[in-house]
Image (cartoon, rainbow, N blue to C red; front, side):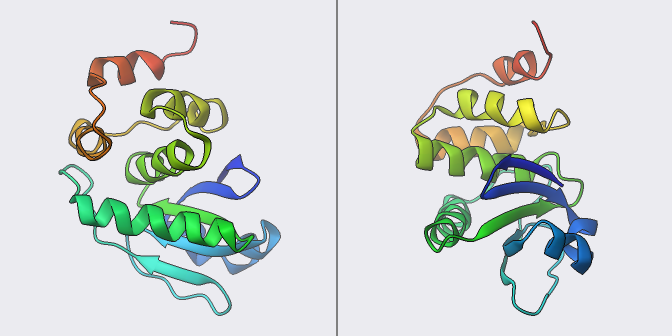
Length: 149
């Protein structure tokens, strides 16, 4: 689990299972993009998002709204997918875009500083670009993932 902001964390499926680690990190909400895991006292939303496929715009809105609503409540939010690399990265990118006014690529660069394994897949990236009406080529994402390039 990597802290992106004091209120926003990226993790994987196994992080959602580890109650002691969730408590240690003071996680109060989880957006789950792999399997649904219930933890008492932690607000959760599970969304079905394919790892290698496009993401429906309604699902994007639902996930980002959940993250931002939990942030407004002062909660620390874990966004978790299977490996914590692709889907969770994109939803965190969108949360930074909306909460800090960053472009998608700049939000991705911010995430890479704290979570170097972050790498959204092309169909997922393109879905979010379409949703936000940004036309950042996937090649730019690949370049941004390589430090000092």
